[in-house]
Length: 288
Image (cartoon, one colour):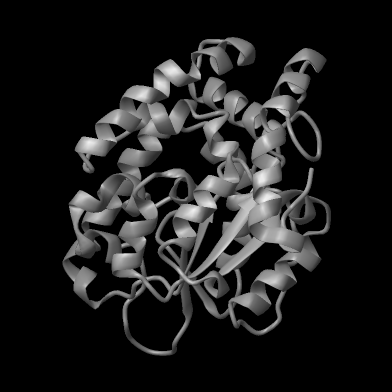
């Protein structure tokens, strides 16, 4: 069945139902978890930055074994379920060697994900997609509306963000096992402060284990960006038959439409964080 048809069918199934089906299927894999691989690579973010498309492209590579499902969320929400549960998402340690990977965009943002990942997969290669944070925030908001979590318009949601997300941040500081649902759902601005998130990861992993890709480059010239990622991962050159965007929003090639006032507000909000990203990454920093 064509990917476009599969995506259309999948989109008609509520997120909660899809999650329950995946968890039911996963239960049959957990008993063999001890014999399954840990990932050699992870796509750690950012959310609404092209990670679904990249997951699909990499999963189709003939020398790659993808996780059982995208967004395993082990280092962000499910570490309490244990290493065997995590391993159950990957292939068995038998036969020909493949590169194993997963893609969970919450990892870049979650305050504890980097140190958790370092403890279990210290040698993993880490791919980071960074999208214009203003466009990312608008796409994130539209996605939450689509899923039924968001009832406020974008401007009101931006105003409400500190009050919604603050309690989860405070709780995580004293309870690392807390599931920060509001923080992950409503962090429209916070997720766009990329420098502070990358610094947290750089504290736990050597910089040569990271590849940062500008999402707009993946959207506009996917063949070139994918070739760069494949080379970074040490894979033989290969490209999929097509580079269809798995979740391109209706607002246009690069992002969702915003009113001029809201866009100006977000541009000003991200002026300093974008400058901090350039200070951190230098010539390699994406610019918007």
